[in-house]
Length: 386
Image 1 (tube, rainbow, N blue to C red):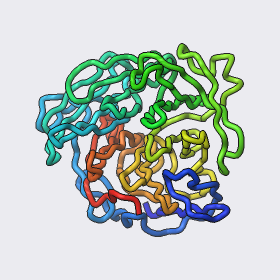
Image 2: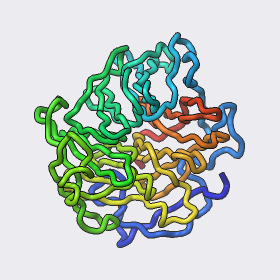
Image 3: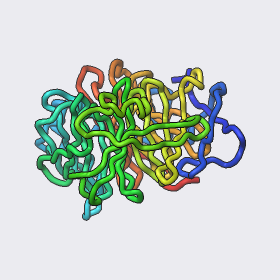
């Protein structure tokens, strides 16, 4: 934990840059990591009772363990918990939906919480699917669960009650990872988790229905560290763009992972080159916010699921490495926020905030013994940007 604490990313050309603006993080260069605390302080030197290193004022609890009954319910939690999101309920409570990245019995489970954070129920919202990796929430309150295998589909689920999701073939048949919805531009953006994956956008024929629409893949021109331009090439929804004649006109993204929309920006990660990207749909401008190869010894390696706090901080889960959730902040710092100890061979996934922004949910997919653990972290999260 002590070997990599904190990194300040310096902008070329000067000027105030902020996550979510139209001219943020415009090009970065490598600099040595500076030891020091992140915005929430240094993580503790010893793990808590649940095996987590946390910043001062933060506490954790275990919500569920794979193969065991969710405490306070009669529902058995799924194996290999992966991507997730929270959804507000009319009574002030919320639901946390969580994918199961297993085959053949993947799908999605959900935990319902009261307004006080008490577990009030757990149930299945999607069955009969495989390798449900990540996905994304919609503004109309559904969960889009993505299947991560060739010819995989996106399934739309109602997280508020037990049920069965509906396949959305118009969103493509490929190795899906995650999806983010832009409610202003009325489009969806999707990542593909393969070595020669593409980055897609979907324009519904009739918003917000996902039954039909136009699928396109990105073609990038220019310097992604200074701000590149994205054009969109129509592709078939029947297979990966890499298998189509249009592939030569589109850009390869090496192992697309998490994807999240916030403040007019689509953030996504690519694991094979350890990058965090930002696309501004309004201008079709694409930038690399973070590239681990430019920061030897930096804290964030193995980028995976991503979410954004109310303070416009990017929380990025690590797949492997030292099992941290790291964050990128508007003042251009990259630092570890928490670390799960003793989970060798696992990965962190499913990072999502409760509607009030005060609770962070995440899972260690394989835990210490091959069985996943889903956590809740509570504490003084910032709820507005500095």
